[in-house]
Length: 116
Image: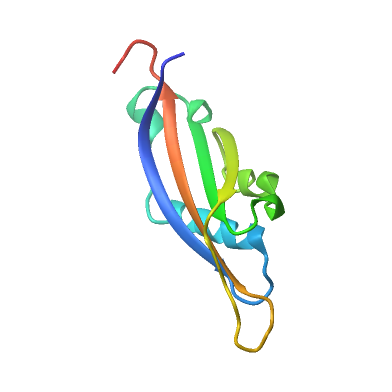
């Protein structure tokens, strides 16, 4: 397989009061996806389910991320979700749960065989 990255999208999402890392990440993924509609697979004569979609989520507590819930957002493709340390937890002045900010990078690739 010759995996060729063809597209990268970025997004940001937050959970204002519940400290919900998964919800912040879901919002970040939607932020990245909802800005465009790209028919990438069809441009290369491929089926949408052949797209290799790698999602990297930067979040303050990576162990709190439900990666399956993130993968469910995508209607097609072969999805891989990785949580890494990053994002931002912003303390609240009232002592409540911090505001959680997640950042995502979504890389879309195809197996193009020997094509460059």
